[in-house]
Amino acid sequence: MSEHDDSTPRIPSVARRGFLAGAAAVAASAAAPGLARAATPAAGPAGARPNILLIVTDDQPKHTDWAIPKTVDWLGGQGVTFTHGHSATPLCAPSRSSVFSGRHAHHHGVRNNAASHSLDQSTTVQRYLKEAGYRTGLFGKYLNSWTLADNPPHFEEFALLQPAYNDARWNVNGTVQTIDGYTTNIVRDKTLAFLDKAATDSRPWFAYVTPYASHAPNVPAPKYAETPVPAWNGRPSVPEADRSDKPPFIQDATATLDDAREVRTRQLRSLLSVDDAVQAIRDKLVALGQLENTLVIFTGDNGYTWADHGWLKKSVPYSPSHEVPFYLSWPARGLAAGTTDHRIVANIDIAPTILEAAGVGQPAGQDGHSLLGAADRDHLLVQWWKQGTGAGGPKTWASYVAKDEQYTEYYDLHTDASGAVSGTGQVSFREYYDLVEDPYQLKNLLYQATPAQERALGIPALAARLAADRTG
Image 1 (cartoon, one colour):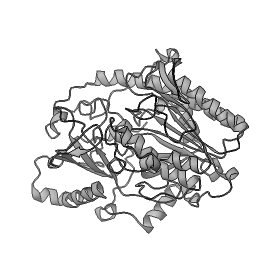
Image 2 (spheres, rainbow, N blue to C red):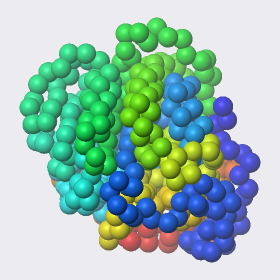
Image 3 (cartoon, helix red, strand yellow):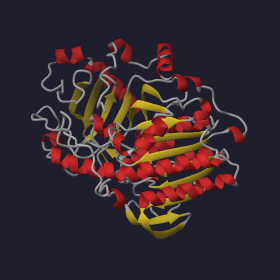
């Protein structure tokens, strides 16, 4: 499995900066003919509207297909594989809030895991779908720091998990209880029971399915506890010898290849049960006769570094932290041919896609766009905020991420438990990587660069664009 698509051509700077217009639409149509065919909204009578299945895993890195072969066979082989899928904020609660709202974190306000109650629930896809007559269900993890006894708004049925792998606490339709067993299997069974009701309830449905895997401590089901996983010798970014061009927290990072192998093994084993659950859900859709007209989206809430640059976590601007698996299938709209789409896509695009499929107009304030047409972007704003003022770890940062280059700024900013931001905003460190020549982000071209060299790299224009993205 290739870690990077080195066949992607380098785009001239004039074309890659600024939003793409007519030429981009043509290019997107050629790259993703199935999605281009689906550009017309799916408005119509309730019986014609698709069911919607949204599966969001936890901390699943991009290069984990070995653990989800049945998922890849279904949604990749009979759907669309997005090769450039991203989380716009590589942290659980901000990312999931972007999934729900179609907004960047600086717009929905959930800038850290403590700020979940800052999400305006009236902006969520589940609210719009429920008001449009959909039966809505949530099964698994919801939002970090959400009080378990509080029912998640706009979900008609739910089994809300207090994150754990075994014998966890749940809020099931308003009743807090302990349910013994492996939680991925419980998520599966609750989802299947929800789908079964389609036999007697003619309304279209929306199921948000979100197992705890592969989040730490990455506990596999007993049946997979000793499953051998493919050997992994790391990426060039793992044994990076000289990190003097990196920010101080990365210079101090100490994770090793052996550390990464341990985490990777546990993550892959935990995802095997997710794959089983996805297969069971597919089998149920077939049995119900609903596979054809169900829009399915599968992604991770954020990626995870495997000791890249010594860092064994998420929350950093390096590619493994914000790149995620991203699949879509909808046979009734011609999206079942096993196509590959090379557009830059993100979690902010999920809500607009779902709402277009359901025939619901895109609300004002969404930052993403529907993936059912030819809309394209030449780069993505990716950002993360430091919570509190403690020492260590990354500072608040924002990044301009394109296919061929990435520019990042770190700031003197921090957030409180409500997501409110304070600090001087002064830029404390910068990074720029040529992702064609340096896909593993080993050489920060701004380290000791002269003003002339910065101008040659186009840094002033990138900085201006990043500033506009952060305030737009």
